[in-house]
Image (cartoon, rainbow, N blue to C red; front, side):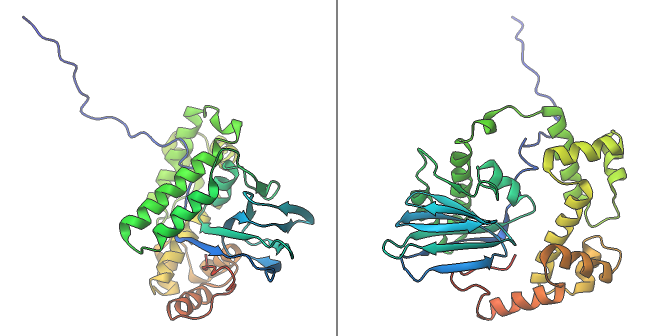
Length: 301
């Protein structure tokens, strides 16, 4: 009797995660902390160097951004955007206590927007999501200082993001597969070739589509131009090299910049300080120096 077997293909094209161009968490800037209730909490016109989400676990307070004031109560989650002046003040009679998570990455602003948090919508109360319990679990995992515990903490962070995103109906809509594949293939190519002399035209040529259409499509799907994404990714990689004590000249060359001068100019535009100042801050942190904003133990970029 003849038997039929289903032939397994020898090779299949890689399949990209449809959200690859939305998530880019910089693990070097992922941290979590806890602030107990105190009427002395008065952070007025502070500027944070990374994105921070805070969850009120008890008490009340006020959050202000762009001239708008938001009352805070138990269960509220509020966003402290990167590089924007904000204020948050504890209530005098019922001061709030909170957990806070700091993080950064090329696409972190977009990641948080998918979870319902943005400059225009900075405060949310996620019905059916126990955000305080999730943050408490991540906090205790991070205190163990082990590789396995840190990986589990990252897994629980993404699980929290998933639950937060489920509160927004538009995030359940199907994504445009072909368009997403083009963008994810472009990002995959950028991450593998950022150190080389690549351009928007060369990326579009790799994809087999026109440069103008590619630029329009990339901006529509990611919120930034391909040039901006490539530059920001190069800078993010340079930050890691500078933290490893690589010289500014070497980091510039390793990340695809044509000169250290141009690298320094672009670095300051994005990070806010020069590469040498960034490297010195990293050294100060490693040597036990005081962080820029000790109330939240903020890490630099």
